[in-house]
Amino acid sequence: MIELAGVTKRYGEKVVVDDLTFAVRAGCVTGFLGPNGAGKSTTMRMMLGLDRPSAGTVLIDDKPYASLPEPLRHVGALLDARAMHGGRSAYDNLRCLALSNNIPLSRVNEALEEVGLTAVAKKRPNGFSLGMAQRLGIAAALLGDPRIVMLDEPVNGLDPEGIHWIRTLMKDLAAQGRTVFVSSHLMSEMALTADHLVVIGRGKLLADTSMQEFIDNNSRSLVRIRTPEPEKLRDTLASQGITATETPEGVFEVRDEPVERLGALAFEHQVPLHELSTQHASLEEAFIALTGETTEYRTGPLAPSAGDPVLAAPQPARTES
Ligand SMILES: Nc1ncnc2c1ncn2[C@@H]1O[C@H](COP(=O)(O)OP(=O)(O)OP(=O)(O)O)[C@@H](O)[C@H]1O
Image (cartoon, rainbow, N blue to C red):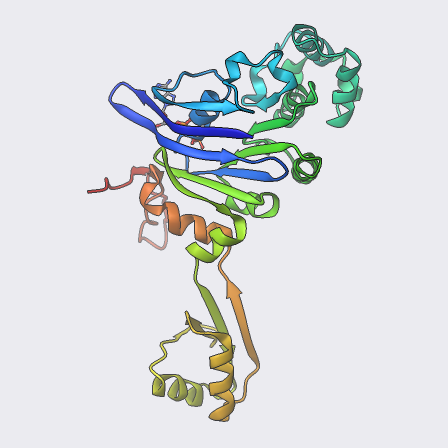
C-alpha cells in the first residue's frame, strides 16, 4: 500500500504537484493518468524518495521510502528505461543492483528470463532498442521480488507483442496480491489493464475511482438507431421532445435517453428498426471530458485550407479563472 497525504511540489513559483492525497492498494493495477506535464513523473519520483515534496508525506507500507531497509525488496520501479549503465552488460547491471540490495544472485537470471532477455544477458544496454531497454528496466524493477511495483509509461517503445506482454505481466503481479502502480497518458492502454484509476491534471487530483465508475461518471451513453423510414422516426422523436443527430450514413444518434424508452417508442409508433444499440463512451472520451480544461499542451484546430492542412503548433491551454 502506498499512501500520499497532501503531497505538493513547487519549482520556484510553479506548483507542479498540488496537494495530492490518495492511496494505492494491493491486489489490483492502479493506472495513474494525466495529460503530458500533469505531474505524474514528479509524483512518482517523490513516492520513491528521489524528489523531496515541498509539503505532505508519502508512506510505503507505513514508512517513508528512505527508511525502508533494502528498498528494492519492497518497491521495484521503472522510471527511465535508459538509466542503466550502458557500458556494463545487462547481467552485470542487475548483478550490481542485487549485490547492493542483498538480493540473491539467482534472481538476476530469473528476472532476465521473466522479461525475455536471457539471450542478450551478456550484451551492453547501449546497443539495445528502446523496447529492450524497457524490458531491462522492468527486470530491474522485478529483481527484488517486491510487493510494490511502480512503472512510469512502461509501454513506451514496445511493439504490439511487448505491449501485450507488459499488460499480462501487470495483471499477473496484481493477481499475486502485489501493488501495481502504472502511469500513462494513453487511455486506451489503461482501459485494457487498470482496475482502478488515479487521474491528475495540472498536479491536482481529478479522480480516484474504479475504472467502471470513472467511465460512468465522465461519459455519456449514446443510442444508435437505423430505420428504413427516417421520416417516421424523426416525427416520433420530435413528438416526445427527444433530440437526435443524424450521421451522413443516415444513423440517428440519441444521447442520454434509455434504450428501453426509445425501443418502446419505435414499437408504439410502428417505426421499423434495423438497429437499436447502446454505445458507451470509451475511456479515451471520458479522459478528455475530465482533463480537457487541465491539458497544458494541446494541438490546435486543423488549418482550414483543405488543400494544405497543417497542424497548429501546441498552445498553452487557457488559464482557469
Ligand atoms: N526539475 C524541474 N524543474 C522545473 N520544472 C520541472 C522539473 N521537473 C518537472 N518540471 C515541470 O513539472 C511539470 C510536470 O512534469 P512531469 O514530468 O511530472 O509531468 P508528467 O505528467 O510526467 O508528463 P509526461 O506525461 O509528459 O511525462 C511540467 O510542467 C514540468 O515542466
